[in-house]
Length: 106
Image (cartoon, rainbow, N blue to C red; front, side, top):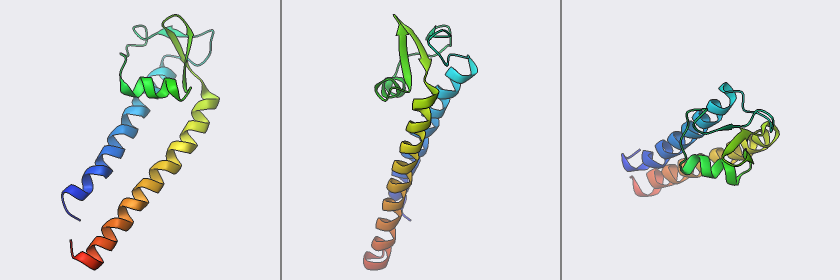
């Protein structure tokens, strides 16, 4: 495996770890319902790409102005989806690496 071939794998792992960190921040602060929604400052998290992605996927829900919570049902669905996508992407990368090694001696 070449040095550049591992870059996509590292990126997937980094993104997944960032997603997990955001989710854990909400779980640890107890913001799991409309009633327990908090501001990002209260849970000590700041906006960014990962948070925006989770909001678009409706894993993080805006309850009131600037107050958010984690929707556990949507999290379960999202987790299944992201796991399938990750496994598929990593499998494709592995297949391309094997093909490259067999046919092109990369």
